[in-house]
Image (cartoon, rainbow over all chains, first blue to last red; front, side, top):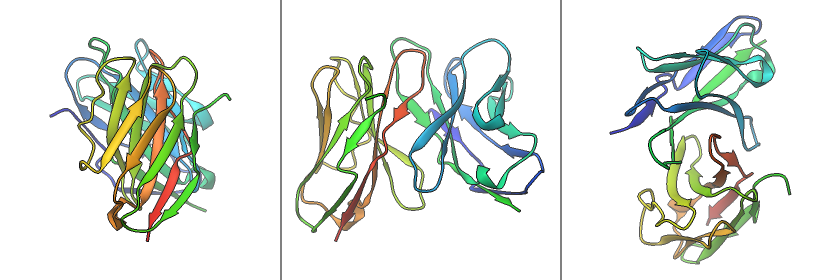
Length: 115
Length: 112
C-alpha cells in the first residue's frame, strides 16, 4: 500500500538549535512531495514542495527540505528554531502518473520549540 | 475570494441529527478533497473529486457520509444521523495541476 510515514509523533528542540522533522514515503514512481504546517487554532498552510531539480527545496519561514531518492525521504529542516515554529507538521506526496491529484498524507509530527 | 472557504465555521448538533457542510473551492481548481481531523489525530482522507470523473469515496467511514460536487464548483459533505465519534474538524482543500492542496479553515463539528 502506498503510504507516508512520519516516524516521530513529537519533536522537541531548544530555541536556536537546528530542527529536523522526518518523512519517508512508499509510493510507486517519483512523486511530488509537500510539507504543510498547522499552527494552533489555524488552518493548514503550505510550506514547500519538491517537483524536480535541486534536491534541497527552500520554503516559507526559513524552512527547507531535502529530497533523498535512494532513501525515499523528504525531511524538513530549519537551521535555527524559533518558539513560534511550534506547530503540527504534515508531510504529503502526490503521484505523478496520469491525472492523479490525490494527496497521500503522513499523520503529522508535533514540533515543540522550547525557549 | 482568494482562498478556499468553508461554512459554517462551527456546528454543534445533537446526536442523530443530519448536518451539511459546505466548501467553496478556489475558482478554476479541478480537484477537491474532504478530510477529517479528530482531536489529537492526523488528517483522515474522506473523499476526492476530480473534474467530472467519478469521485474517490474510499475514505468515507460509513454510509452515513456522502458528498456531492457539481462540476468544479461548490461541494457539500453530508453526515446523516450524526454520532459523537463524528466530532472533528472537517477540512476541505482544492488544488490545481502541479500544486498541492490549498486548505480551507475547516468546520468544527461537535456532536452532543
